[in-house]
Length: 150
Length: 71
Image (cartoon, each protein chain N blue to C red):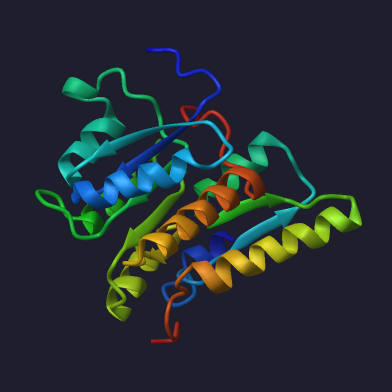
């Protein structure tokens, strides 16, 4: 496995390249160091997490930002699979989506999303929200230590 | 935590573990039991207030909480 040293690893699951680019920009302006990885659909997300195929050297993410409406494998399905997986379930998953539908919110929490955040359409707001996610999860919260262990 | 997170009606309520413990096994176990996040309680009063304020800001202004949970 590649040495991904002390750098925090973020997996961004986002099918809209424009949104992914903006989120990455927002993470870049933060003061902390990250390595952010973008995958565009649910199948790629699970491939990355399970280190299959081209993702055989993928790092284990410290945090996952997951959109709900994704091609191939839906975000709800991805969330279910992560949270039912003995080794992956403890990785915090932040649902980051434009959907404000109550049923989406409810369903996400039922499927054990760690939190649900509505993606703002306004760029300035988006930067602010991504910054808040970063601050909260990387400076306030204690993330699970070495995730590979039982 | 285990009881909340295995109760069909309660499990969706976000649970923030706020404790003085920094033990790795406590952190791991909490996430395995589906705690929404784990925060170490600072001993310093000023720091503690800052952390509580961060929790409040994040969960009440940034996050979309589950709607009426009793449904």
